[in-house]
Amino acid sequence: MSETKILLSEKEMPTSWYNVMADMPNLPKPPLHPATKQPVGPQDLGAIFPMELIKQEVSTDRWIEIPEEVQEIYKLWRPSPLYRAYRLEKALDTPAKIYYKYEGVSPAGSHKPNTAIPQAYYNKQAGIKRLATETGAGQWGSALSIACKFFDMECVVYMVKVSYHQKPYRRIFMQTYGASVIPSPSNLTECGRKMLADNPESLGSLGMAISEAVEDAAGRDDTNYSLGSVLNHVMIHQSVIGLEAKAQLAKADDYPDVVIGCCGGGSNFAGIAFPFVHDKLTKGAKVRAIASEPAACPTLTKGKFTYDYGDTAGIVPILNMYTLGHDFMPPGIHAGGLRYHGDSPLVSRLYHDGIIEAEARAQRPCFEAAVMFAQNEGILPAPESSHAIRLAVDEALKCKEAGEAKTILFCLSGNGYLDLPSYDAYIGGKLEDYEYPESLIEESLKKLPVTE
Image (cartoon, rainbow, N blue to C red):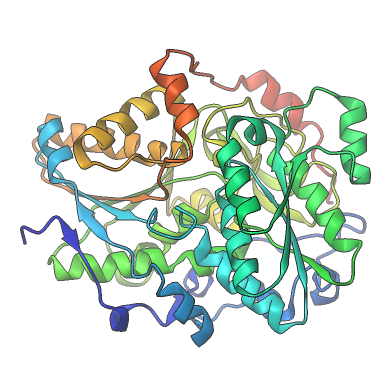
């Protein structure tokens, strides 16, 4: 098949999400209440989540039907295209075949609307009028602002302060769709005021922004909290990426040897990889699934598999996951969406069990790969996506050295057209590589909650 782009028709778009919990040999341990340290129940989560999402959070059904109203909105950009990267292959002089699933065609320019739309839908069905959330680089906040506007809901976004200033166009994007955008930590919440008292010059973190958004949601009856990664229901919604990619590769009579996604909280990686993990777990497929994370925030590769708070203030459930410690303060790298201290419990469990892999990369080599990709394939990648590209390029070069014609699939999770200041910093030689020291990780891990 010689076509560069492989498309599906609307009729071929998935009508159900895939739930990897149906096939996992070991499920994550249950979330714990931050005060009692006992497993949380629906009544605990009901204060900030609608019941339908709570059901998905604990479901072990393999397939979960996508509501028709959600399917109709998905059709604004789904099915998203799968490309064969012929020009990149030629530039690398590799025998490998490189495919990429392009999620940057969505209204928000990333994969995030795949879960923002259903989350807004289920909350609207439950009578909620306002959603509070956090965002790192701004892709999630952008997606939820669009979703809330589609369902006539209010949206308030606590944006990590360093990204708020690094990425002003993301803020403008969210405000264009009617969202209120607040740099975090802020003085609008109790936990935000405490964080600022401790460090008035704080750059913020996803953990801090989560604390503020949850406090906001818990304090109002008309408001729920919405999270763009980490939680099980988010991983389920994102499975449309891998399900479509599998069908598209079948049209090309191909199947990947390696599947790659960048990984912060885990939603993009899970979206592209979990449908192929299904094949590995149920059919014995010899596919490798690799999460690519930043060396500055190496949650899987250097973190500890244990219980930890999902936020900095310790007010949300304690999750069983790989973590760098809930008060971990990541440096202000430009892949802002990958700066979370923990990871999805599902991704963490699969990594702990050796079913998936993880590798870390520094930001300058990632931007180098992103520029190479842009110059050959004509799409400017989001800084987060550059981590997946770097790993795909490295795998393709290994194929060149070994003379192996493997098939590599990665998710281009978003475009970088609102991230030009990051590219400006790279081109101007202002980006610095940063590998988070083991000593600081050890110090942060000393503050893990006592759960036994």
